[in-house]
Length: 172
Image (cartoon, rainbow, N blue to C red; front, side, top):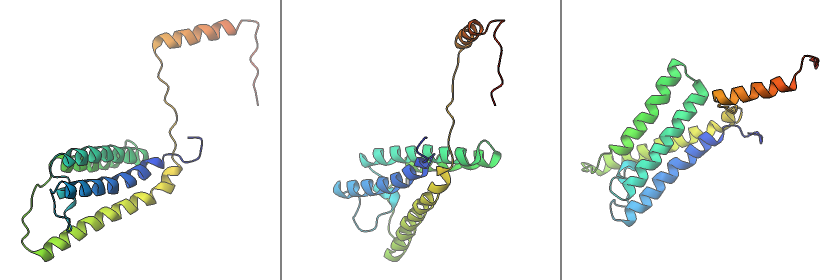
């Protein structure tokens, strides 16, 4: 990118999509009366249709972005492949196979688990924001795809431009 922002849009988009997804599905599920408004689990907010469809699709998009994060950071190394596929697959798995209803055995345990879940999600979003300066320095060169016909045409044009009497000058 010419503006010097590089690939910082990857962690920025993920960092904005995650809380947006959670908050939209939370409000939606409360309005649909699918969860109680008092400290639900994140996965409970996207447990019932129609908000579950939105929840799953958004987490799948975030999983794809996570894969791109790891590819840009680690390339095709063994560690990069393992971590680059394990996190998105885990996220995609949990976006589809959520726990539906959990019986509360204790209000204190429920609040502790819910607060821990939301704090962990928030910490992960903060971590993604810390990646933005690093990803500003990463750029991707344009990939050019040529067919055999294209290469023949380029050779014919180049051959017609250079004749036996032309000289090649070394530009320094």
